[in-house]
Image 1 (cartoon, rainbow, N blue to C red):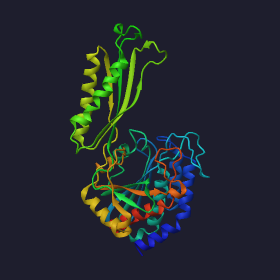
Image 2 (cartoon, rainbow, N blue to C red):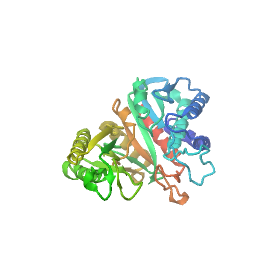
Image 3 (cartoon, rainbow, N blue to C red):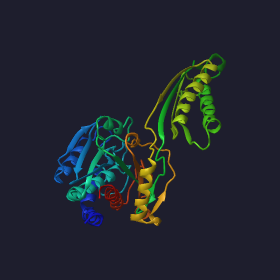
Image 4 (cartoon, rainbow, N blue to C red):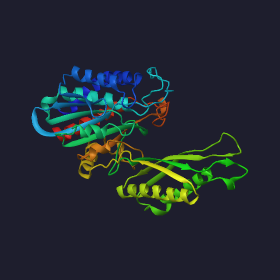
Length: 394
């Protein structure tokens, strides 16, 4: 009984799990449009005889389900994100997306199928549980404001003591697991800067207020924020992703220019500083050239901040179950992830499971049109979730 039997059950589920994942992969739905995906999940949960299910939780098609153990104990929550990306698939798989321009290019189909498999196992073995499991099938992770914050506000963590999430990664070899000792992702903010100048003839620049020149100065000067104003031990990234102005003819100076980009930070004070200084410096530079500034700064997801006690417990559990050769501490990436909202409310941790395999070309980065995964990562992911369930509920 217990964990070893659960793992046997998980492996017996594997063919079904693959089938579920491939169905989800063939019929992906983007953020805030996951209606049929949610229906599929609900139907499976009801097939497993899980009746405590809430649908349309939060700002979209989020689902919250609960498996009640037979004995008192803590309540833990596992999360899977369910949305896909607006991307045309180019991966050579027989179950490629049938929804044009939409693709599961980040592994959310893998997360969903894995959590369904774990749900079936623990529902069938619920009499052994000293406590309860909450299943969070979250909508709209890919598209801010995301689904996590709204699901939290809708009460998805009521009664929950600990919350855990995982993400498959193709830059981690299948069979390997990585954990973060503290931060698991960065705060992900975006900005738009509109520069209003005065256009004119390219041969008479003195008669104009050139927004291209102003924009070039903004781009150059703002790069000094990270290199000269931020403590090197507190990571920050400032990236200009776009610069649009004129271009209709070679001899016309445009009236306006548009800059946009992203800011990634871990520390909340650094985040506040970057927003304040981007506004202040941009406005000052643009005005010094005689232009007018319109600046919009949008805060995205906060950083994923794993809680120390639960992270240490997770690490020890992973080392015990998977061995030192298969478990490693990872360096935080500066990507964004709205799992952060759960960890602001409850202790827990977020970790990575390897899904990369060069032999089957499962080595393209996430959000790439040729993205593929090694599907055995669903076994490893399921084993990790079940190990957490054993650690907290047995």
